[in-house]
Length: 80
Image 1 (cartoon, rainbow, N blue to C red):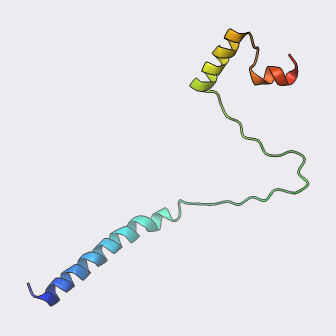
Image 2: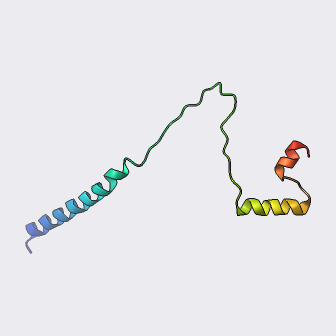
Image 3: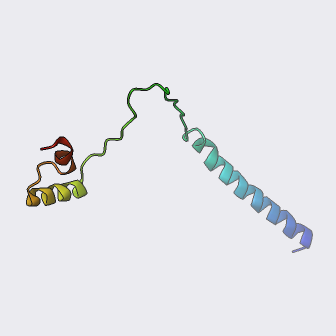
């Protein structure tokens, strides 16, 4: 194969690879979304994050029960 033909084949392969990447990424650009929400500086309460219990929470509850604690940390905070 002549050098010029090898360069042509390489260029075509690179363009094909670039086309595949572009075709795969263009629809994905519509999926990614970032919503920035401002919070008033006069907000009465800071946002909180609720975390549901799982195996770790069940294990902690079992340990609290073995130590005679009612609700773990919450019992200490509530003075119970």
